[in-house]
Image 1 (tube, rainbow, N blue to C red):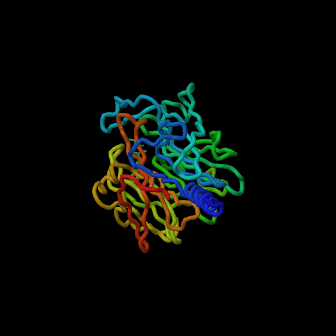
Image 2 (image 1 turned 60 degrees about the vertical axis):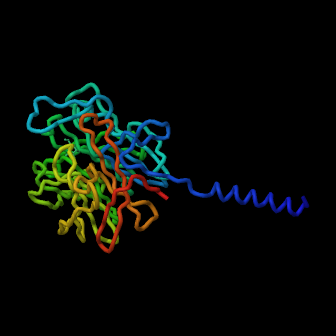
Image 3 (image 1 turned 90 degrees about the vertical axis):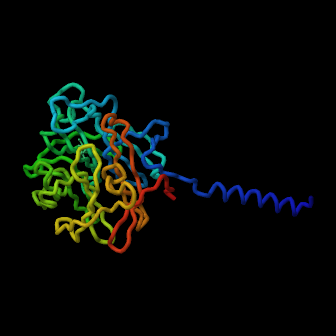
Length: 339
Ligand code: GAL
């Protein structure tokens, strides 16, 4: 072979090699299948939420480990539970490979009166970053095993992955607080959205500027409608709130409401899920909607497919959320590619 042909083929081989390695690898999400972390252990972050900070995503969730049992003395509803194992944290740069960062908020194993004791309930943790105080602030649902305590817990850290220090638990504005989420607006104002008044009414409570307490300014919505599992997001200047009905661990149909301002009038709209099993949110319950960083129209709907008799084995349903004018739709996919 002539030297020129040899050079040509060497360059060709190098070019093919480089372009193959540059090609983004398929990063497929399989909703409802076991999802392993970077060490091959199933991700344990239920009722979760995601924080994006300095180039990384942090997934926080309920660490549900070990046996599930039914609370025997509660006969009017199926109170299945497992030990409150604190809040787990996983980090990722691509939303696909997740590294276990450990238990960001540790449970208490010794004092049954402590809000974080393993005999209590710790659900739906969410974390937001406060630019003014430079603190990461976590809110979560704290309850007694019969769910009569109905409070919101607050914890704080200097680092996204924790450790978080427990601050206090509150009944916001003297109201019950169960299923909840946080929403931080572009202007830095943050809101605690929670099922209240025996789950009959949802409250949207503006937090103080340090995000540590309710400011006292709030709005009651879905009055008498018994909605829970709130997930709020903003798209094109409009606010969206996806919620579930109230049926314990059993799935039901989701509903989306929209508003022009967070504390304004919320219009109840429709079930955003489409197609088979849309009346049970694809056998799951909403927990969070994640706007993908740097992509205007890419949002991920996150839900929990609860396994009430083995809560640790509850699965994650992540699906792309589609926008059409000011409407949204969520379609089932057996698998989909994050690219
Ligand atoms: C659901 C709620 C879950 C959990 C469960 C307990 O309605 O969304 O977070 O509290 O009830 O039965």
